[in-house]
Length: 396
Image (cartoon, rainbow, N blue to C red; front, side, top):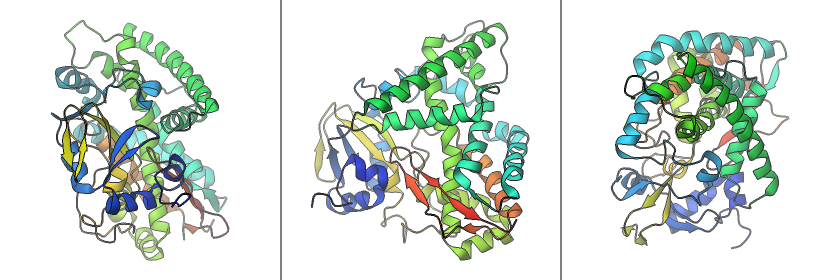
């Protein structure tokens, strides 16, 4: 069976994890992956069981995990209890549905317009690289407070961090690229931190510094640095990849693309949400077992690392009919792409609202939008997965 594209290897996962997941769900729903030394949970119901059991499966604060190397510890994903709640208060303050509604149009629409205008006359583009990624990093960069940091830098940061998290083969060049990015993040964010100490503002960084604290108190840079890295990695890439994945799904089905072009506003949110299910931008969330726990006939030993594979759960045929197919009109059922409480993604309202605007405008303003048959559509990654090459044409 070696060499098969369904075998559980880092290379197969990075190229296309779905055949691997499909095989695991049917043959070995709880599988130990040597590459990251963790148990993969791949079926929908089992993922929900583990994700919903915070007492047994708490966040993983293990220092030998790739997250520790990339983000540092402790961060918002590794914390629990009161500390976690207090920090989340700061993060979530400006990301409630009501707050997002108040600023998302002014934040997103001008940026979307700028990037559509920059490619419109060309009649073709890689929509991920030339449109969805830049929109995402610019908007989220501005929300974080990185208004002066150029897009190219922000894109490099999340690519370097995402590669670091998936560096199963321990490639030295990938660690070097990561360390360079982290040094630059610390330098720029450290400067912004100092500025917010002098004068708090409405940036996400400022909210994380002061939110949930007693009056007159502020979190130290050391305390929030790992969490800011989590926000930079998840925030910069997730809305862009989610929109690109949804767009790829739409363009792969000429019927759905046509409906989307005729009624973009009515269908954008539906399409965006199905894109999140079809290809989860963040495919895995780590946990650690606090005691022995039996699931799907396998005992996970106390202290073991566990990966809840949302990317696999979202393709489980027992939950979603014809699960490998993109269908924005499928019966609405909750997917797992935003994770589980209490660690449910803080940015889910913002991501959805941005994605809805971007998708609707792209289909409204680029007539006869379609895949470019002369170039290949490509996706990559498994912890983070996106359609990296989305070659499209339209009538300019």
